[in-house]
Amino acid sequence: MLPKTELKKIAQLGLKKFRDQTGLFIVEGQKSVVDFLDQGWHCEGLYSTQKFDGLQTNMITEKEMQRITQFKAASPILGIFQKRLSSAIPTQESALLLDGISDPGNLGTIIRQASWFGVSHVICSTQSVDAYNPKVVQASMGGLARVTVHYTNLESFLFRATLPIYGLALTGLPIQKVSWDRPAYLAFGSESHGISEAVLGKLTQCVTIPAVGHSAVESLNVASAAAIVLASFTNP
Image 1 (tube, rainbow, N blue to C red):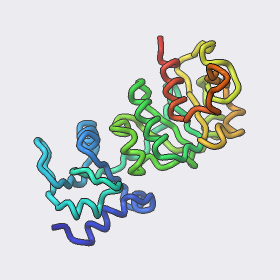
Image 2 (cartoon, rainbow, N blue to C red):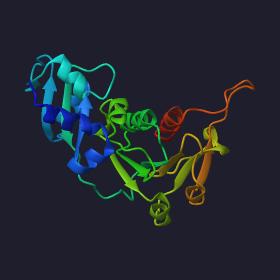
Image 3 (tube, one colour):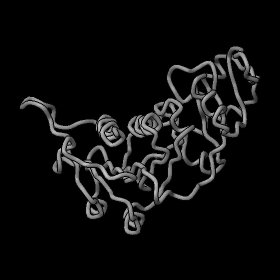
């Protein structure tokens, strides 16, 4: 049995305030936990309701797991990991720029896609959702273990940028006609408002994904659009 105080401390890591205070975050699910362990992230503790081969865990009851999980349906394993210290933002390496992405599912999915397409860095505006939010961690499906996420003032960062900057917008050069210069930054805006005016002014090229047919939906989900852009950008 875990003390109530320990259960409370773990559960509080669902809030950014406590993640910032402790430098810790939650990872749930066997695959994600193993991904973080395999990538060398420091683990403060593993908790499970069943035994897992090759993993030393603190056995707890299902009721206790329900107290600390961040989701309606608890996974049988949960890990507490230490956040990594901030590192230098790359200036000569391709990266994604995320301007005001507020939905945790979108950010997590984009991080997962970055990992799939071999992009090692995601640079977020300070208004974007916290990458260590449990829903971001879950949606990244282990991508956060492999991709470095930075937070900065994008306008100031891009003022000094020397790489070309491509930004997804509703109007611009159709993606099929883009001749990508690499390395480069790929910018995506918020779900509601798109790329901010401050960042738009720094773009080398606006890129659009044209709809096919007259009965198309109004717009693409930002995570879906990011996958299309990444597939085109990384295609030799």
